[in-house]
Length: 375
Picture (cartoon, rainbow, N blue to C red):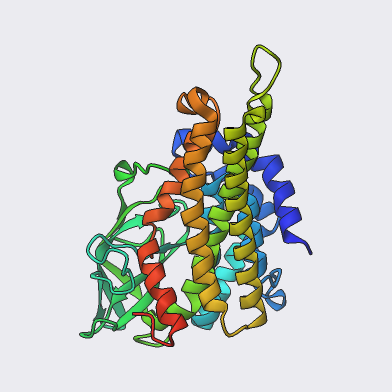
């Protein structure tokens, strides 16, 4: 199945008409996710043997890119669901795995990540949040600074420190209705991607049973590197590649529609042609790198990780410059937000600070290419 075509048709029909509204209201796009469930997108990476579609990292990226062309928020939230679900599918206890698969397929429940912390910065895999043994279960204390799909997702993957060593961590699958779990929606005021409602989450002596600890004890860091990072970083490359395509589309449309008194259009101006060319080149580079990385991962190529990390850097660095050029093309109409240029620029800026940051990604690429461990 060509998932990009299917997702593009979906996005044009359901996401495009409300893309601006999602940003303006700063509310999670609940209706869109109900439609994603109805169309089967939420079960993409669940194996066919378990009732899913059996999609892989390439399918994951193609759907995200198609959604992000109409709303980067929708693409991002969908990506987070797949990444968190991937951890459950590959590391959760059979009882929990079966339960969540059933809820995703039959009820349309979604998952999200709760990793970022103010104290750990971009190194979210070294958390300050702690999980202590309490009889046969655990008690978690701490907070997460930015939690995508806050309050709406049914489960959140939480990484917590469970030992004395810096990397002694575990992943916990935390239900949204857990005791002593709270969200501070009033503290959400992002510059871009406003509908992903990434507000802080607090766990104050939050009890959780052993069933919801995911994987072998102390395997949190390993899960981040093997189950989270590839789909997460590839997904962000797809989000910002799709956003860059949206900027190119907006720039071309505006330049051709904007007419002067003599009948010529903005597109006839040589400087505008140059700006449009650069934006298109940025988009083409991002899409090409994103698809090449996802194919390398699908094929198990030796350089797949380096390509995935590089694809995200290319997409994010390009989209900010593309957004800036879009504002120049849009001029007063962009400034007054008559067009979507300002929204696209804000969405692009969000990618600069989303962990792991661009600076960290460059370090990781250098480490991978020279045979060193990612720090």
